[in-house]
Length: 224
Ligand code: CA
Picture 1 (cartoon, protein in one colour):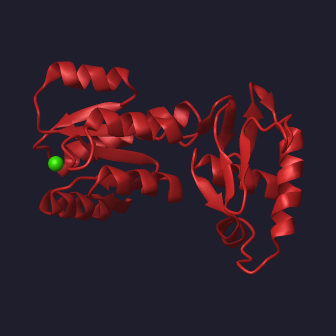
Picture 2: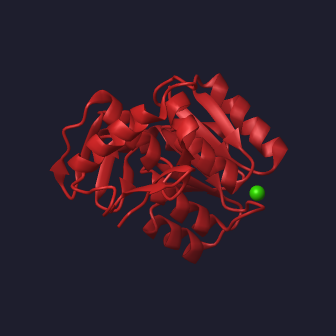
């Protein structure tokens, strides 16, 4: 059983894939656009992604690049184009496998199982990377430039939450609600944890490298 994200804009194909995978005991979520897929991957990290190349909002290569920017999740390309150079390009750009449409549910299921076995052998399936930061949410490990970071539970949660949304300004209310589970909590709680986290990242509020406070709005994690 795996958590599968099916990215496919054709509702009939999407529905059929979701049904067939669910019947095979997978936990399936789906997205019809690249933007929905990226949001899914950061908010509910899957074990594997099935990615249709012909999406309405972004080219398949672009989607893959953006996915790789936030996650190491295995990606199986599903393409109607029997286009070898494109497939080779995407495999080189970080796709893990591909299927030419139309394919059977058995074939897809077997490919997913193979990709998941490979991912399990090579360790975690979801690794967040921002600049020199590496965060493994499953193992709750974080490292900066190869050196492990000793973080408290809350510091880790805060860092992982921001790292899953690199470059986005995350509002303090959102952090209180999602990381602290206290939507009406005190902003100072965040400031204190941010300053501890900054110290561990070797930076200060005055000279930020990764953690940038956007006055009156929130916090943004971005590579230096
Ligand atoms: Ca399509």
